[in-house]
Amino acid sequence: MRVAEAWRVAIDALRANRLRSILTMLGVVIGVGAVVALVAIGTGTKRQIEQQVEGLGSNLLIVVPGRLDPGAAPTASTLTMDDVDAVIRVVGDRSRVAVTISSGETVRAGSREAYASMQGVLETTPDVFVRRLDRGSYLTRTDVTTGRRVAVLGAGTAKALFGDRDPIGRQITIGGVRFRVIGTFEELGQSLGVDRDSEVHVPVTAAQRLLGTQRIDGLAIRAPDRDRIDALGSAVVAALVKRHPDTDFSAVTQEQILGVLGDILGVLTGVLAAIAGISLLVGGVGVSNIMLVSVRERTKEIGLRKAVGARPRDIGVQFLLEAVLLTTIGGVLGMALGISAALLVDRLTPVPAAVTWWSLALAFGVSAAVGIIFGVIPAQRAGRLDPVVALRTE
Amino acid sequence: MTEPAIVAVDVTRTYDLDGVFVSALRGVSLTVSATDYVAIVGTSGSGKSTLMHLLGALDRPSSGTLRIGGRDVATLGPAEMALLRNETIGFVFQSFHLLARTTARDNVALPLVYRGVGRRERRARAAEMLERVGLGHRLDHRPNQMSGGEQQRVAIARALVTGPSVLLADEPTGNLDSTTGEQVLGLLETLNADGVAVVLVTHDREVAGRAHRQIVMRDGLIVS
Ligand SMILES: Nc1ncnc2c1ncn2[C@@H]1O[C@H](COP(=O)(O)OP(=O)(O)OP(=O)(O)O)[C@@H](O)[C@H]1O
Ligand SMILES: [Mg+2]
Image (cartoon, rainbow over all chains, first blue to last red; front, top):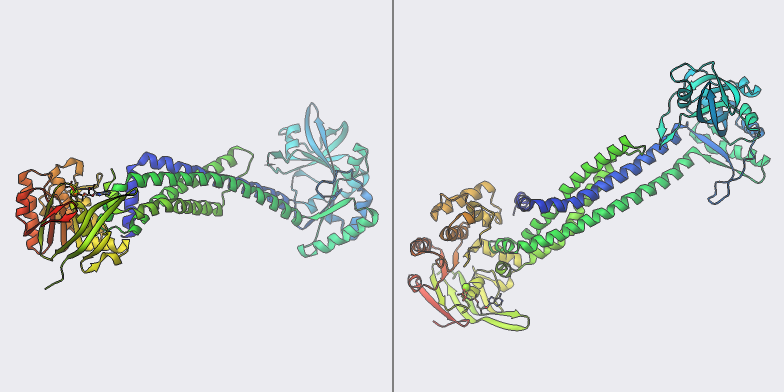
C-alpha cells in the first residue's frame, strides 16, 4: 500500500469519528501547550535575570560582606571606606571601583513623598555599571570627598516627587535631611515585578553620615578585560584578607553569578518541563486507549481489508498513522496554544516568557513519539487479527 | 496441462472452543483446475464456508496439504498469504462485507489499494467493473443506499477487480430474487468462459446443476 493511501485512510477514519478524535487530541493539545508555555516562562525568566546581571556592566568582580556559603548566618558588614581605599590602590584606577551602602528611605519633596532605595555611592558608579543619565549630571569626586548633600534620582522617584516638572536644582529630604537634586537617571523599567527606578544615589560619605555608620554594603570592580578578572580578583582578595584575616567577605565574578543563576533557573525550567511532560504522557495514554477502542470497533473492517490483500503491516501502519496523526495535529494545536499562553503571560503579567525553538521542536517530537509509542500496541493488535475471525465479529 | 488452481489433500480444520474441539472439516481432498466451475452443496453446518475460507487462503488447514496457485500455504507467512489472496483469489462472502461508509466505487477499488495501484487508475478500473456487473449508475452510492442484489453485485465486482484466477463465491445468489440471481449467475458463467475458475456454494439445486461438477458435503466430509 502506498503511503499516501495510508494517510488518506487514517484521515478518513479520524473524520468519521470527529468528536472522539477531537476529544482525544485535547489531551495532547493541553500537554504540548503546557510544555511550550512553561518552558517559555522558565526560559524567559532565566533570560531576564541573565540580562540584568549582564546589564550591570561587563567584567565585574563583586565583593560583599559575609560568606556566601549556604546556611551561613547573615553578618553585619565589617567593610569600610578604608577597605575601599585599599582596593583602589590594588586596582590602581579609582574609576574602576564602585561601592554601595543602601537603605530604604522615605524621600520627600514639598508635600509629595516616595519610598526609594537610597544608595550611597562613589562618583565612579556610571563608569563601573551601565547607568545613563536623563538630565543633569552625576556626583563628582568632590561631592564624595566633602560629603555634599546632592542626589541623583531614579526615573520612578523623580516622577513620583516632581511629576513632569524638572527636578534639577530642587530640594528633597531623605530621612529628614535636605539634599539638592543634581540629576536623574534614564528609566530602567520593571523586572520580575520589581521596580528598578525607585532609587536615589547620594555620595557614600553623606549616606554614611545620615545612617550613622562606617560600613559599606559592597564593592564592584570592573576589570579592563575578561582575561584579567581572575588575576585582579586574586589581588583584591589578597589585599582584603590582609585587613580581614577571618575573611568575612566574599568575592564573586559576574560570570560566576551568571553560572549559578543559570544552573538554578535551568533546573527550574527542567522541572517545569517535566511536570508538563506528565500531562503529555497522560494525553498519550488517552490516545492509546482510544486506538484500542477503534481497533475493536473496526475489527470487521480490518478482516475485510485483510481478506482482499492487506498485509499485517498495511493494517498496522494504518492504525499507527491514525495515532500519529492524532498526536501531531494535537501537537501543532498545542504549540499554538502554548505560544498564545506564553505571549499572554508575557504581555499581561510581570512574568516574562520567551518561546524557544527547541521547546517547540521538542514538544512536537515528543507528541509524534507519543503517537508512535502509544499507537504501536493497538496497531500490532490490529495487524495480527485473523481475517476469518475478524469478519465473524459483529 | 497447466497446474491446477487449487489442490487440497486430506485437509482438516478443527476449531478449539475453550478446550472443546469442533471438527468443521474432517479430511477433505479436492482439486480445482484452472477452468473449473464447481458447485458445493450441503446442509447448513456441513463445513462449506470453512472449506471456502481454506480455498481462499483466508485460513489454514489444521492438517493436510493445501496448495493454492502452486504454493503450499503451510510455507507462507501472513504477509505472503495476504499477497496470495490479493493476486490469485476473488472472494464473494455470504454476507457481502462491504465497507459501510464507503461508496460502491471505492469498495470495489479496495483490493487495488493493497496492490499499490494509483488512485486514479483504481477508480477507473472499479467503475469499469461496476459497469460490467450492471451497476454503472450506482458508482457513488453507499451500501445502505443499495438493494441486497446491488450490494451482492458490488461484492462480486470487488472480487473481480484484481483479475483473479479463482473466484470463490459463498452463496452468491442466496439473498437475491430469481431474476437478479440469474444475472449474477450469468456473470459468473461468462467469467468462467473467460478462463477464471469458479467455486460457488449454494443451497439451490438448480444453481448447482448449472456447474460443471457438484460436490456434496456432510459433517465435514465430501460425500460425493
Ligand atoms: N470460528 C469458528 N469457531 C468455532 N466453530 C466454528 C467456527 N466456524 C465454523 N465453526 C463450526 O464449523 C462447522 C461448519 O461451519 P461452516 O460455517 O463451515 O458451515 P456451512 O456449511 O458454511 O453452513 P451454512 O450453510 O449455514 O453457511 C459448524 O458446526 C460451525 O459451528
Ligand atoms: Mg456457510
